[in-house]
Length: 189
Image (cartoon, rainbow, N blue to C red; front, side, top):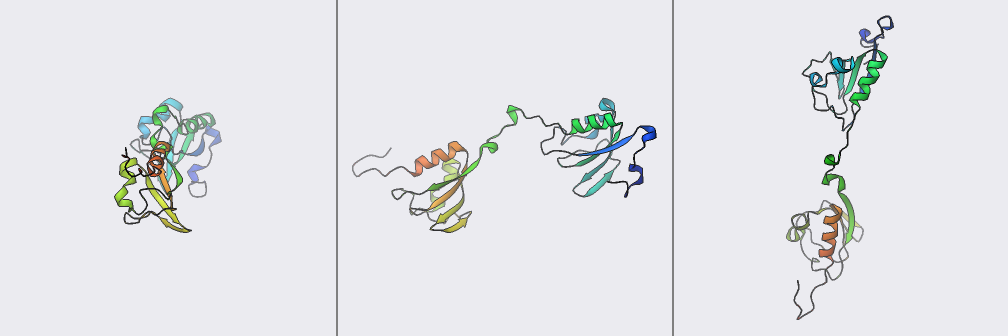
């Protein structure tokens, strides 16, 4: 989107028209909205004259054209109008409602203790995702690593698993994993 591939993109100072571009951020407020609904021309005085999307140029997009994150948008207007348009298109509003559990997910290495009742059990039988919401991203057994272990993989004492979940899910899983078996004659909760 330069003057070399589209001569009309050259600045027209005698008309006080300028062209500027901006790339929409991932969480831009304007993503998923049509150009008509954004009302850039009526509110800010600038016009979208082109969009580059994943290497494809959309010249003179119509009012029904929808903007997406990482679109490179070409704005036409005065310097002030283009600046205001860029600022508007770059707006990202982060509200408490936009926070999701996905933002809290992390990975933690968890060791299988010798006394664990899970030692010798297949992953499918213990179902960590079903019981605690924890997924196993990997298993380390004496330096041999298995990524995304299958349901038939058996846990052994001393294994390390790479657990994926929220902090609370991982805490619950660790507590369950590290419960010592009940002594003979004692009832287990």
